[in-house]
Structures are given as C-alpha cells and as structure tokens.
Length: 470
Image 1: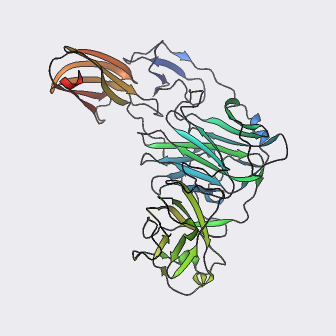
Image 2 (image 1 turned 45 degrees about the horizontal axis):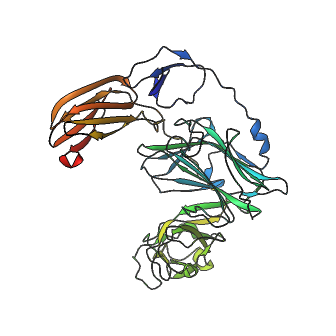
Image 3 (image 1 turned 180 degrees about the horizontal axis):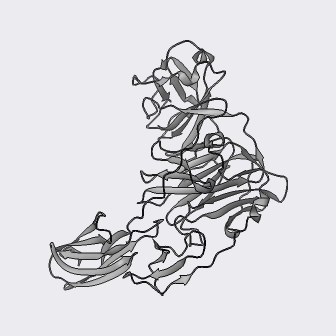
C-alpha cells in the first residue's frame, strides 16, 4: 500500500516501518483512513554477534542487577527510574517528560598504541524517532558534562538529524564510536553514519552514555549492551548514598543557609568518604572557591575533569574528601546545614550530590514495569491557506514516537461550536488530512480527536480564524 501511515503487526499498531519482535508475524499496511492492506508474512533477519569479538575489555549485557557497582546513573530522582527488563536489559523509565539519563561506566576506556585506538558500542533504542543518544568520552570521572563538554572530550550525538533516518520507536540498534589515528567514525549496525577528523589527545577517559526519550510521551529507553575495547578497572568499589542539599542554589560564602542538613549515618564509622556533586554553572562565580558545608566543616570541592568550561549553563562535577572527624562512630546524628558555597555564585545550581564510601553496593535494580500502554497520535491543526472566502484546514496525526499506537476512530471539526465535518478512520494510526472550508468573517475552529476506545480521553485543538489571518 503506497502512502502508508502505519502498520499492524500481529494486532499491534505501529507508525514506523521498523518494529522489533520475533518469529514471522503477519503485517498489514494502514493508510490515513484506517484501511488495511492484505497481509504479508515478515521475513526474519538473522542475528550477527561477530561484532562482539572486537570488545576484549568491557562488555556488559546487564545480566547483573547490581547496576551501581558498574555505573553511576545521573538523572532527576523520581523522573529517571532504572529497572531490570526481560532478556537482561536495562530499562530506564522517565515518566516526567523532558528528562535525560546519563550512565558513567566505572571502568575507564584505555586507548591502544595502534591504528585503531579504541572503540565503544551501545545497543539501545534511545536514538529512535525524536529521541537522542549522546556518547561522551571525557578524561577524568565526570557524572555529566551538559551542553558544553570539556575541550578534550569526544562527543557523538545520534538523533533524527543523523542518517539513516529509519529507526523505529522501541527498536534496538548498535551504535559504535571507532577512534583511530585519522579521526572518529560512527557506525550504526556496522554501517558508517558519520565521521570526524578529531583525534583524542588523552590515553584514558570515562565513557558517558546519555539517553533522551521522545518528547510528549511517558519516556522509556532500553539499553541492551555497553562495551568498549580496552578498559582500566575502577580503583575501588564504592557504595553511593544520595544526599540532598538544603537548597539547590549555590550560596555565597557567608550567605545564610536554611536549617536543613543530612543524616550522618552513611559516614558513621567508615574508613573514608568522598562527596561528589554536579553543578550547573551560572553567570560568573569563582569555581576555585567552591566548598561544601557539612555542619561546621567546609570541604574544598575540586573539578574531576580538566579543560572544563565556565560558560553559563555548562555542568561540572566536583568532589571533595570528607574530613576524618565526621567519620567517627560517635557524634551528632545529622550534619546541619548541608549546602554548597561559592564566591560570586550568581544562580549556580546543584544538580545532584552524593556520598561515596568504600565497599560494593548492595543496591539491586527492581524489575522494570511492563511495557507502556499504547498511546494516541499527537494531533496538530493549522490553516495552510486563507482567502476571503475559504480556508484550508490541515490536520496531522503523528505517532512516529510511539512504541505502540492506540488506534483512532477519526476526528470531528466544529466551527463556532457547531459540528461541520466528521472524518472517519476506524483503526487509524495517523496521517495528514486537508479540509477546504468555506468561511467569511472571524470564527473559532475546534478539531476533536476521537479514539477508537471510548474510554480514552478525547483530544482537541482550538484555532482562531480572523480577518487578520488573511
């Protein structure tokens, strides 16, 4: 069927011509009015794991649920929720919308003295429609580097702007960054999709994997494998304890702090501890004077990377050793206040902070929630052309970002609250529709989306057509 708006695969409705699954399902194309084609039987694509032989250093299939022993996960608490999925996959649910999760592998990537210096692979669905995958290779141990990476970092971004554009929502692809003496190559499933003449100046670096799900939907990203060719093990195993500052604003050195602290339990009786924090830099400020206040103690906090940017909105991870007097078995139960301070702070913000103490983390991933329920296409409406007597109304139903689509029955058009048109599309997936409407003067136009499931919420778009539109 030419001009297909979506597909029905064994009863599941999707918008993309690429969908993951097993076996040989029956597939029907679906047009903009919900009409189905005759079924065809899909062909199985044979799997090829030969690429794994290039990764003799670090290769993680997420069979272990002790994620914290191998990675630090950076993201808004409650909005970035990791879980253990089926087939040993890491599932990151992001229900709040507009969030990014960043994984820092604890082992370091170490380059070889060869024509191919090293390579990194990530098997994920993060770069699907309107999603984003960011791979940062950064000297040091930053937890995240934000929009402005350090000067010596290698950054690779894969999103809709990087061909090939066919990446179905929820479909896993293998992305590889190959570092050579001549530059950097980026591969998708073994085929080159980008290249650069940048050659890293460092010999070892942290591997950061940033994943952003599509907007407008409850977000979910699956990571199946992370690998890199040569690796240095982390120096020690650590256990993390999240601690939240009394204010997320970085204070001036002598500014009054809120009377909010943190429990001392994670520090009581341990041989050593380190506080780490990531700060979004404001307009100015002396980062060399950044300190953390834990009760009466002030810890100098130093960047964990070189060549970092002090530009506004850049992000910097800092760390400081907790003094021995705060590690004693006896003493206060809480340290109040807990804040970060900096001369000329100028609206700098604390994005995250946590304590590291020696020892393997006991934290296990919970089982990931079930796959999200199918979602309705996103409806937009606009006037493409307006004349004194007519208006062209264009309605678009877009489900490209949905992992699974809830079919629609159609949509209705109302002018000044009066029903003027119904466009049926039983079982429809989406598509573009044009309606020529005869109108004079000023009017309110409403388009109402009707789900096939009557229990679902009806969506609508309001438009104003006035003489100034002409």
